[in-house]
Length: 341
Image (cartoon, rainbow, N blue to C red; front, side, top):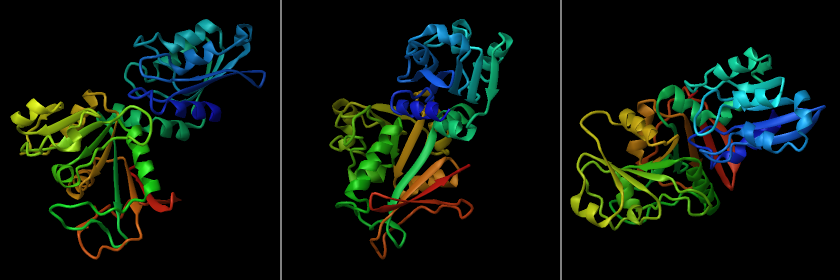
């Protein structure tokens, strides 16, 4: 199962919005086949594991280890549970059950009804961590939400300003980590003030892979099309009450009309899920980050702590004391990680 988990992680950038899944076939204590879900819409891990087997005659004596319950329905591909039965495998070890409504125990039931011995819960916590984005998607009807910011030693994320360059608190090495984080999420979000003052690109340009959707809150349509979020290098979604008609004629982006007189975060997250956004990275500013915190709409937080002292400025968001942090020293920086559950 450890090898299956290792394989599953290879699908980190291609599998979403499907979950990452790995599968291993073992006969006489020897791995005879392995695979993972490489890309959304393509073959599942079990299919790829069977395809890698060179001696099909061994399958009748083989055991399968798979991180997630085999699917039981026809989607982009046929049911993997039925494929396992057809291949003659008599014993299957499953990391965790699948919460997706069309599976949710059905795959295990199909296997057992056909005489396959199924063991559930092998390295379950690791397997559930592997699909944490998918689990939140299925159980909470919204994307997995990660909040991220960097703050000074005295608790500020920037100086007070109306223009000029933002205070740099991340190092060059940790900036690469930010780009990798963006690549792991299908969308990245900032508010109007951050977009206007910082003029960020919000891309994962330092690493190869599919660029995230840039989600920008712009209630009154004041952001000019000269900003880099409108440069066409990555898809952009503007969320506001009214679109800027002049801007819309000059720049390419999607517009989502939203009533800002009511709380917008929960309905916006549901809208993003419908757009196949499985995981959202929220980068700022302080007011937007605090709004997610106050509404409890977050699953993970990463805070980079810099040595710099700003003395005054924009205060960092406040994380409730009830949440304990896990410290990580990496890339010449200190990162504090929080999980909601």
